[in-house]
Amino acid sequence: MSTAQSLLQWVGAALLCVAVIVVVRTATFPSYQTRPPPCNATDQDFIPATRARLDRLSQAVTFRTVSYEPGRGTPEELRKFLAFLRASFPALHASPLVTREVVGNFSLLYRVQGSDRSLKPALLAAHLDVVPVTEEPGWEAEPFSGQQKDGFVYGRGTIDCKHNVLGQLEALEFHLNRGHRPRRALYLAYGHDEEVSGHYGARKIGELLEERGVKPEFILDEGLTVTKGVVPGVGKKVAMVAITEKGYVTVKLSVRVKGGHGSMPEKESAIGILSQAVTNLERNLQPNLWGSGPERDFAEHLATEMSLLPRLLTANLWLFTPVVRWVLAQKPSTNALCRTTTAVTRFNAGIKDNVIAPEAVAIVNHRVHPKQTIQEVLEHNLKVIDDPRVKMEVVESLVPAPVSPSGPESAAYMAIQESIQQIYPDSLVAPSVLMGNTDTRHYWNLTSAIYRFSPNVMTPEDLTRFHGVNERISVQDYERVMNFYFHLMRNVDKPLVVRRHEHDGDL
Ligand SMILES: CCCCCCCC/C=C\CCCCCCCC(=O)N[C@@H](CC(N)=O)C(=O)O
Ligand SMILES: [Zn+2]
Ligand SMILES: [Zn+2]
Image 1: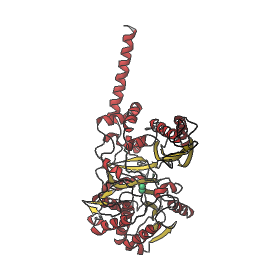
Image 2 (image 1 turned 120 degrees about the vertical axis):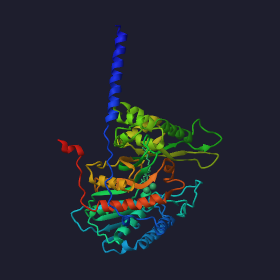
Image 3 (image 1 turned 45 degrees about the vertical axis):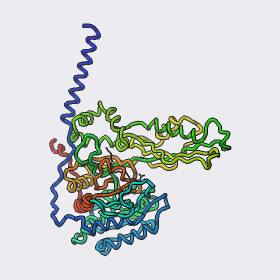
Image 4 (image 1 turned 135 degrees about the vertical axis):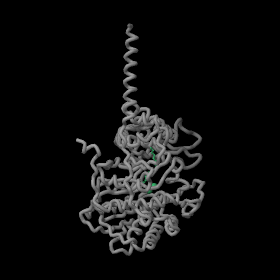
């Protein structure tokens, strides 16, 4: 036998081995999906989306509680919104069990007293402010009308996240009206400037709770949602519970040149030099790190539920990680899980048509992958810009959030998962990474169990409604939101026990 023939035989044998491993792993990959526990709720335990409840959500949208910049919001609208909330939930506000505090002038902190002091409190969070409405045309209803149309409530805040504020308050009001006396204390924390980083709202709430020595069992804030048709290869609904958040670093790039008369330009302008730098950043993205951080768990939790090809890839990440990386990088929503993203959000230069701009400035907003450091992000930028005329300064930064426990070893995570499955019995639940930030950044010192999840459904078509045009929620979803919080309040109103992994007892 020639050397070439024997080499060929070896290669063939190796390929066969790999194929066998791939097939065996695909067939035997463990399922992480648990069946929803039976829900003992009766008809009387259901909060229907009545006209009054829908109207309250609609009215909430009419308050233009817009945050523009840190410290620059809409105080009068916030004041009116706070008064509206107080008037809309009379049982809760009159209850001797509930205390209400206004923190940082406009943020709200409610505490519902629990009868069992041995139980650590739960904390549900959301925010009162919204992002501005851009000039973009295409709204099918006026953005601050709260108009109800074709089974939807339209307007800013309907999915980010007045639905969570109102949904939580409706659930608590319903609970108290039925004479419920909670065992576990419950906090509701509503910041008023989350959309601009929560420096005057959630930060103050976090400091206050820390001062008071409050150590919640868990915190649940807005976050990822139930998705339909968003996760590649999975047909069922997927509820994505974020167990961490990407970090961020915002950098300012600037170029200074000599100004002068537009009729006698130098070879290169500040605008041209900066444009090149920005183009270099967009053409040479930060490295694709998919699979090296907590986003890998997300895929592995869903592997057994995927159609054949994605299942085969996900069950064999030891071999196919590069393929999965390439596939996920193709769409903005999945690319966000792959890497530190690079968004050029501002570009300013020039003052007059015939004056050479002496300075050009760009702002670049990076969302940092959990496995990358801010230093590494900056080094990458400097390397690809490769031009000493471009000055780079860090405007603001935040490291990726600590990763909260998930799975059967975390009782709080399981209580959230069970509540999701009671409302969405046909859904899969998986831990994930939030690509944006929430007010929980100010709560890191309070507990290590921080989750981010909003209980409404998003389809691929809905993704651009978030901070975009035609933000809306369906009546059915809003009903699910209220009932999710109601179920969660019931499910956590007892000692939470860690369930040992099923196989542990086999030993
Ligand atoms: C495998 C597919 C993954 C795609 C999942 C898409 C699911 C979409 C669901 C919700 C979108 C969530 C977007 C995150 C927003 C976080 C909140 C936010 O906007 N925060 C601001 C302000 C701040 N606090 O810093 C932000 O700029 O991050
Ligand atoms: Zn939000
Ligand atoms: Zn937002």
